Amino acid sequence: MNETLTVVGGGVIGLSAAWRAAARGHRVTVVDPSPARGASWLAGGMLAPVTEAWPGEEHVLSLGEESLRRWPDFARDLAAEGTDPGLASHGTIVVAFDSADAGHLEILAEYLTSLGRAVERLTGRAARRLAPGLGAVRSGLHVPGDLAVDNRKLLTALLAACSKRGVEFSASRIASLDDVTGPVVLAAGAWTGALHPLLADAVRPLKGEILRLRPRRGCLPPPPYTVRAMVEGRPIYLVPRADGELVLGATQYEAGFDEAVTARGVRELLEGAERILPGITEYELVEIAAGLRAGSRDALPYIGELGEGVYAATGHHRNGLLMAPVTADAVVAWLAGEAPPDEIGAAAPARLLQKERV
Image (tube, rainbow, N blue to C red; front, side):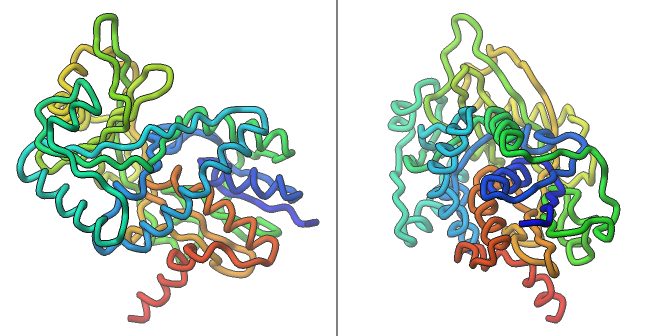
């Protein structure tokens, strides 16, 4: 444990890895000019591998479910360091606006049932009973096992835990890994592709706008569940916070590294949300922002060794918060010379070399 572990990137993945490694006695430096910001600061906070599932993405579901199982212990350990990360167990409701959207939900329900996952089909009326304030939705699914976390409380807790464990922070930028000695974890999100040639064309930015709203006096409160919805083929989500705020997201499109909020993106989100939760039009709009998720060539992140002592922890797309515990545990295992969680295997960056040979 004499060498310092360098973690490039101070988002949820980098901070989780740094905290877990420091708690095991490693010296750790996090390199990031603005830790605890970026896409992690703008996330919705859904920990929902089941409702994110889709046919053909079985490895993503398996990895997400394994990380979800680790989340309660992860949150308890983090709270024991002194700051509560805001984990919530209210579950998820998925709803459909029209008949085509209902067909999409039925495909998801059949797929999850075929895998033996618990999912309850809902009529529109049953969905409205569970979540008062919903509009005229056609149908829905109830997934009680999904969790959610307040992303900003989580990042605050991770920063505090890292500081408590002696993690050092550097605002410098790493232009080349030749300048780094000792083991390195590349967790710079959408910017990770510039740090290693194998990731150069494998990690790309995916832009997403997100809104935060707060009910005013006389408004119905937000639903007691996370609500995911399909509205004329477009996905949106509404995640309630313990302080009464509601997080609404998220658009997703290719725009390079452009982080400007567009009027079109805000309009799409508000129009979609109004159809699902009509009372939202009277909420106060308290924040509008855009962030860049780190997309991969497929739906899986890149978690594993790139070369001796160089590890990738990137490309998590919509699942960065969800997969933070299992990714951090993999980093700790590598440093100890142990085998990482079995589910990590499918996310190994070595699959990039295999595709290039094909």
